[in-house]
Length: 123
Image (cartoon, rainbow, N blue to C red; front, side):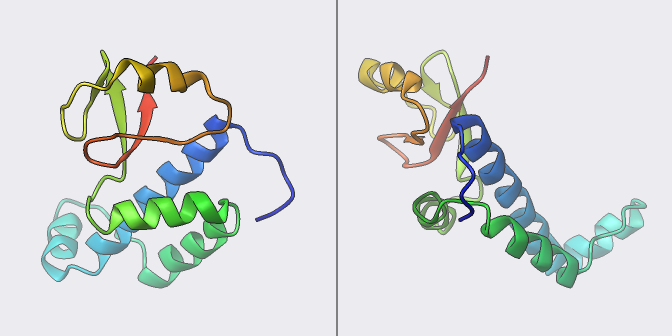
C-alpha cells in the first residue's frame, strides 16, 4: 500500500469500487449475461480493462482490509452492506449495541457478527 493515510471513508470507498469491479468481472465472464447486457445497449467492459483497473485499485487497499474483503467475497456476492436502524442489510439481523458504538472507531472496518460482511451506515 502507498504511504497515504486512509480514513474510514476512503477505505470503504476502495472496497466498494473493488466489489463493483469484481461483480463486473463476473458478469463479463458470463456469456448469457454479456449477451443480455449487449441486447439492452450496454457495452460490457473488456475483461482485460476490468482486470487492469482491479490491479491498480488493489495497490491502494491496505493488505489487511483486502484479506478481509476477499475472505468475505468468497461467501457473499456483496461483501460490504449497509446498516439501517441497527440492522445489517446483508442478513437482516439486529446488531448488538456494542457494534453500534464501534461505529465511531476511526479507520476501523466493522463486520457483522452474524454474516461477517463489512458494514457501513446509511446517513
